[in-house]
Length: 334
Image (tube, rainbow, N blue to C red; front, side, top):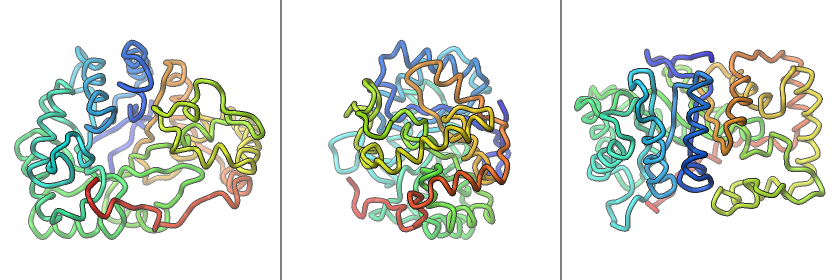
């Protein structure tokens, strides 16, 4: 496993990190989830990403139990706050009240005294940014959080937060967690240049576009039984528009010889592509079986040639989304 700095911070993270967005506590049984975490540890993954909202808080609990007994100092545990975790009006958002209560719940479920990175899961238009950043800064000073990050924020929102932190002497954001892959490149025009300048790293999710870029969804055929596209609990709605797009699926199949040319399978090619971006600190993978983890980690350290990258762009032309306006947070708390 290769390692990179999280942005310009001193924290090192594994190039491939393990996340449990729609698997732990939902799609797979706990025994399988623990087996996947153990496989990740065996392969040198030290960075684990979750969120309080995943599987209604159950994902954090499963991860906490799976990591129990591991040397805490050898791990980087990330979680997030924003989405609803209860029925109350303050059980959501980035108010001081919810942040303070949410971190305590997360620490209890994760069975740890601190998290390495605490991330604002979306931008909260209903809370003054100063209030949110002061609450995060207080958690750093209390030792419950070591670093602060955001997820799916626009360049303008990140820039505002950095200015406030600088003006008020708060700890600065060190990372952003966006969706990023061969098909979804909306961070490239605005977010990445800002983050390169300001020292933030990207911890990207969906590098395989929910499995579409693995080539398992074939044009003219129904989705494979047991795949994410057939399971409402595992986020089928996130990929419905892709698995129903015959031209896209046909083009994805044309990536297979390119992967073979690089000595990779399709999933490894997609992960290696993401890691070519120097602003990416880590790419998050999910898994339902240990063998998926063992295969995916082989993308770490792989260098793709410029000619191959150009061929990938040519194959996917017309299906690549680059509009930065596609990065959005709810206008009101959910």
